[in-house]
Length: 378
Image (tube, rainbow, N blue to C red; front, side, top):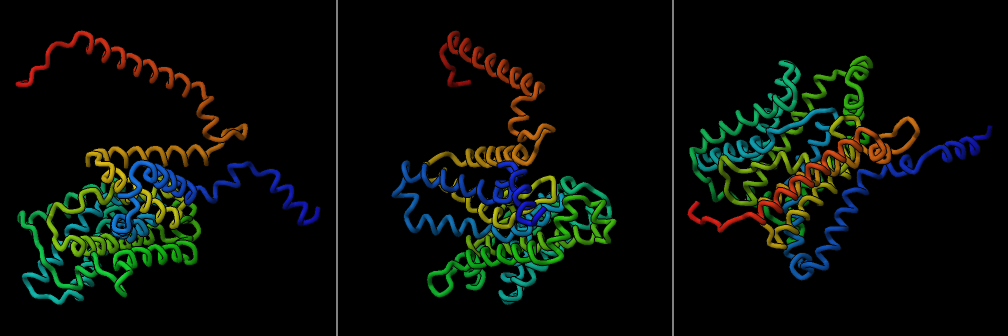
């Protein structure tokens, strides 16, 4: 059989899902970005698309880009890091003290802050690989440790007013039109894309995520590689802490409480698998933009702050479910979504959910019919 005939047969054997899968990571968040843009073009075009608001979206996205880049490597190798918010806050606090109390030059404190973040990432990696603590528990515990140190050091104080270099990193401009944080964020994503796609570090990351045992058998030092990924994650969290300090021109121990949720959400929405072995740096970049656009849209529509957490959670669950369904096939070759809808067990669970929701609606209606006068005094 000729080469062209072989390609033809292979092409005919591919399903629609096989053709779409390589592009899912970027197409998913891009479609959602277009949906948000289209909705806001109808709901609040004047406020949402004005130049100052678009600049706000970019600045907000830039803060998360370095962390999303590093988190892509961590999650791809089946890890997770829940401590990045505390790492960022503690780094900002220590940088602030070095500048304000000890007179360290700003350029040196930036280097110290990134190195300090990398050191905290190293500690996370050692806890996970040497003490064999699961990533989720280990980084959650270290999150408490780092946040505790930040609270002890700050003693409830808000440290403010920093040198120009710090504020330039957080909200300055290069050549009077390029926002410095956006340049830092985009360069970090470009660097991450190059490392993931063109270096052994990226290949080893995907290999470890696909099968740690097989990667070990091929000679890859899995534990050492995982430690390196956490060091990178810590360094980028430290950088984000400095960027946050410069952006606000202030820092306190309780800063960055939702960094881990936002960054993990962006990476997962971008198509990086929580089960390891699949990564997309472009998808992570699109995921960061998507979440920043979504939160900004909620603010523009004057929706309460707490709904932002609800929206982020829904986006995470929806994205993970969709990617899992689209990648999974049953024995007959049906896509995961069709298989899930036709699975007898899932049908029974769906009926149970319908009954529970129906009972809840019925009880609410009965409660409304028999409701008395409300008692404001409680």
